[in-house]
Length: 460
Length: 91
Image (cartoon, rainbow over the protein chains, first blue to last red):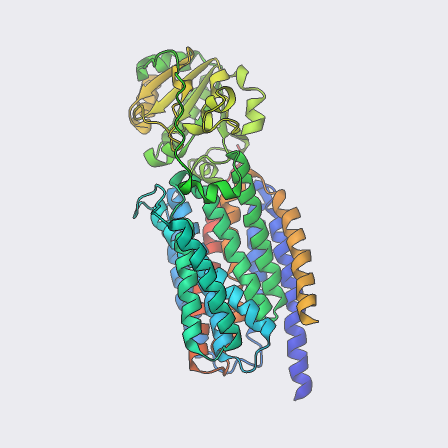
């Protein structure tokens, strides 16, 4: 009997090694769009064999509850994955981050509640999993509410918020000490979890809508770190490996997002507390509106067209109209390219997915640096619903709040069309000198309608 | 000693993670994040023993909740990532 117990645990851990290898290969294949789908399948296979082999665990004596939970979870997962609109991907990823955090919280809690004579180490890492899991969960729910506009997107700050945060951290440290010393007292469980949930809310509240790509990436990383901490509590290697892969991924994305805004992570996380910078610089020149009809004549003559999408394109659902216009321009002999700023949209890579959905080939999507080196060669740059990411003030106006941020130099193209609803400034609240440049024309109105008007001119 | 051995695994896999993820192109960052959601559902294998074991009623229920939540992440995460990746086409 004893032999067979050793054998199963050996088998389980051996399969975990294979599973970890497959996770790593899966991520490796994600390095190119042509192999990425296979990579995702490989990763799913790794997960499947890990789950199946875990069910051989001799500690598992009843399967009814497991079966019900897996079936219910699968049903919800399938529903969410099939129903979600691509424009709402940031909300879904945010929710998934939160669910991952909550799962790790539950595992850590069950470990503390069900364990007898747990070592201080296990109690400490279980506490970490509780803490990170709870912060990830409540933080993600707030992020989701902000993204889906169920609450206001601007930073929420109140007087004394910084002091409250410091007190909160002190209270968490104190209750953690109590939890580790007296793990059998359930009051401490609730106290730690309650405080950690509050911490997550306080962490996301002061962050504004434009900084959401950073927050989602960071919470993505936390959901992995929570799994990692749960892995320490359960002494499970695969949980640690998979959790840290996710943690690393989130950290890299967070870093890319911060760099793309030329800000440090600390400055993003505390942005709500900083005074609003008002620039007193006077922008010279005038705004010159253009009708869709006149835009058509310029586009008809253009040899090369650059499209720069922003969140406004997603809001107006203009990506399909843009793809249609792209086809017409290409039939007309023009080259069409898309330039995508790392923080365009509400999450990393958001624009790319929307354009992929509209059937735009990924070979026509270019990163900022690639396009900036040859932007002077484009006859027309069309800016759809983007503002701060094409703001030349970042390059030429010292003292502007966004000075130093890397931007797509749309103003260097021969002609610039800006598709925009009105003259409101971007999320950074900064005026955009691009609109006043001599080579820039504003086409006011709904982006989708404007594009459809131009498309109609082409077919006439 | 176990703690040190686990830390070793953590350290090495963080480095592997950094090296791998750095090579993911910007165009795939959204699928990368939803795929990461799915991978973080790995918590399910920790939850299984808690949901099916004899650790007391409260632990069993928490374990079952964790299995449910992690399965949502695994199934939903992989499916939506696949749905997205299928849309990335060459000319």
